[in-house]
Image 1 (cartoon, helix red, strand yellow):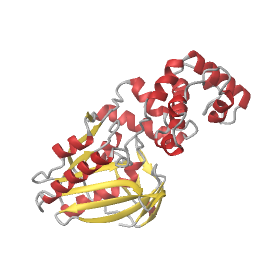
Image 2 (cartoon, rainbow, N blue to C red; image 1 turned 45 degrees about the vertical axis):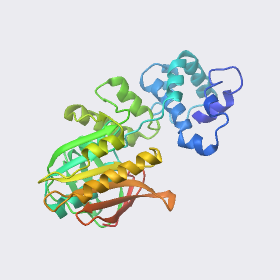
Image 3 (cartoon, helix red, strand yellow; image 1 turned 180 degrees about the vertical axis):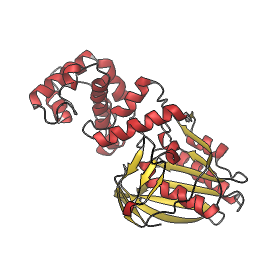
Length: 327
């Protein structure tokens, strides 16, 4: 409904004229790759969350579920005209999300590594954004059949439509947790935290609650990702460590860097794997689209060295709403 109101207001000399100019000649593939609609949706949601547009907020969830289209269009136009810098800033910047539900997809891989190595963990996240999933072991998890793992008193409780078996559930000790991102978000900054929330669709109350719980936990725990190129950082950190199981992991990340950066990341992880031993193993845990079916469920894969065999652990929903555990 929001995007429909924008389309209605284009070409009338209003606040939307020019917002799509950078993509005027772009193919549809680039428009989707640049997440152009999400940029604009994020801008309006930010104006609502930041209390800068009270008239618009009155027509947004949770206050209104089905606003009058004309009223919504008028409130949007008023907000965009009053805050052009917000709209322009959002359109100029790629969206940045940190979907906490992906920890439900990845946790089985962490638990598998802990079980098979019997060692404490050293966890390294590529493309960590705000680093919310760096705290994966501080969440509570509900699997199928009433089974659970983790801190069931944590402010972050993850559950989804779980099918298949249940992963191993050993005690886990994370000795070191590190992460990198080209533009890390420090959620201790209230405005940056609002920006992160703005990219969640306003009517998805469960996702917003999950994100806010993870932000609160992150503010207490710290562990902010560092600003770094993923390939440089992987080359510096993706190596085994004696007495620890090192896990390099990422979720919905590897498709975005240029091919040359992807190649360097894979090479760095493979080099770390080649240097691994039973006393210093290294694992690569990923949640990424299935190359053969990019529109279908995503794949959670695990490669553990020494050995280096790649395993398909699960097929999952991009936000963790469903997990089909294959083990």
